[in-house]
Image 1 (cartoon, rainbow, N blue to C red):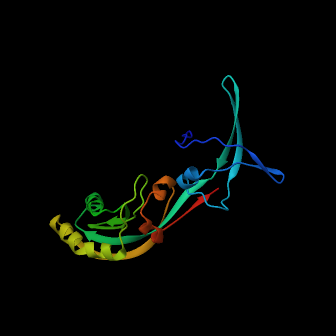
Image 2: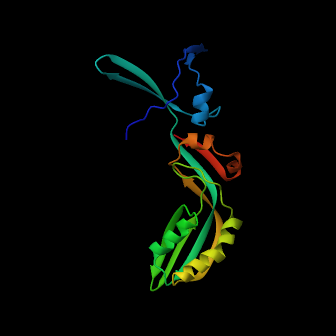
Image 3: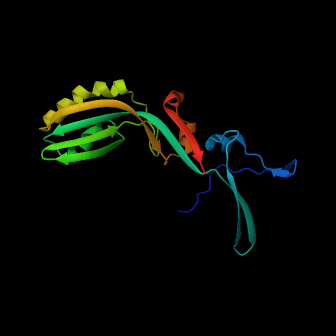
Amino acid sequence: MSWVEDTVVFRGVVRRSGNSLIATIPPELSQRFLIREGQEYTIVGMTRASPDFEGALQIYLGFFVVLEKAPRLDLVVEGLDFQSLEQLLKKYDATNVVLKKSENNSVACYAVFTAVEKNRVKLPKTVESVQELLPSLQREVESLGGVVKSAEVSEVVVENRQVDPALLSKAPSRLEKNLAWKWEI
């Protein structure tokens, strides 16, 4: 996968600080990439000849990792296949549905309800709001010919490595209590 140049570009001047040379990161870029003071990075010198010789310094921040506290619903359902159950849970806004086991006429799975997805941020669900969905979900499972044998709601921490930091920098502030993020080199 090749690099994609960002839309924010600026011109600066290299300055001296002690024995080092420094460059300034403008606020637009620091906000766009959620760069904090004290953040580690790697600088990579880059060159190309096409046909003129060009040089660049890439400030490599690493991998952007989002950690989100989110509700998780563990379900055991009889009389319904996994695909039907997955579609139903997605209808209730589950971000990810994972099959744990399927045997005889029973399906065990769990669904996670995150607010942060790859390309968007939704209103966060709470453990309580997922518990409130259970009676309605149970009725729909029964209308499809299934029976909910067990349902348990808990809270988990989900790691997501496919989020653009600009998405979070524009997200509502009420997400902050459920989110932590970092750059990993």
